[in-house]
Length: 457
Image: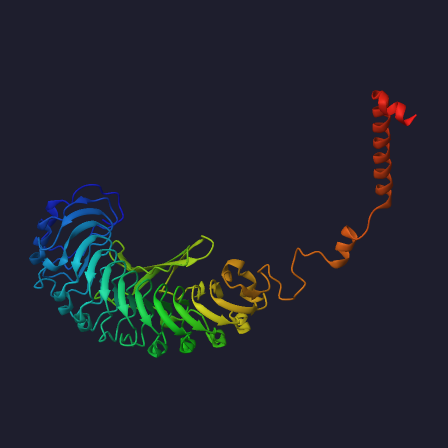
């Protein structure tokens, strides 16, 4: 019954369907509280109430009623409450939990980390606060983690080296500390989004040991040090955003060695108990230098497929693109954003050979010298990609790299023609007019004043 125009409370009679296994009421206009009667369905293993207007507190109201659930989706509602009150005795076989985009608050519950079968965990877009518990490291089967857009603080747990995790979203929190002890070492990792936090220190070498990493976002932190050359080893990289940090040094020419081509290794290939593969819809939303990757899992009617949605905002021109298929496999927008750092030196001319690069910005650094030749993709980048670097020159900037050739400066010969010579015809005309005016003025004075007339004659 998903994706209809249902407008009402959730009917209490649904609780009478004792052998109900899956209930999908997502993408409707349902409102009110979630009825406790739903828990009377002893075989209910999959409950999806996403994207409605449901409200009220659900914890601990009916926690004991859902011992058989393996998947619970409550995202996109108006639910509220302190999730710490939710008892750890329920959800014994829980594999998928999504309560994102609600009004839950409090600390992340420690009991949650006992559910070692969890594969998908999404608590994003809420009001959770406090540190990320070290118990997260117990979720050995976790493949998708999204805790972004909360008020989480403290450091990333040093034990965080989950071997199956493919997508990690911790953006837009208040996380601090360095990345040197935050071990994300997992050869399957595809997405790592730590943007808009308070992380400090250098970008560690272990990042280069993630061969499948396709999306790497560290925008708007306090990272420093020279540009990490080891990032050139990330041959699967599609999107790299290091903007708004304190990076310094030169842009390494080895960036041109990155293939920046979509690969099947970038897939989010999770198998659910149904034995059905996860597909996805990739939404690429061109915005203002911000990259938001937000997970949102849905199930089609009769659950023939499960969709994974990723939303990515790029800094360019306000266009919007939609891609469908295995996640990032069909990605054609390639991005490199190094703006708002302290990088210096020249832009490596080798970057012009990266023909798939479509979003590029080195704005507001200390770069100098001529811009690379405007060939391949570099011929499409506008002045805004390079602004804020006063020592850069060459097109598309209005500053020429050759002294004396700056536009708008008149040549010497032109100046001489305009200011060095006087037109003689104009001179004679102006002289005659001036003489006539003076002569007539004298005649008039003599005619009017008898004293001067007698004196002159």
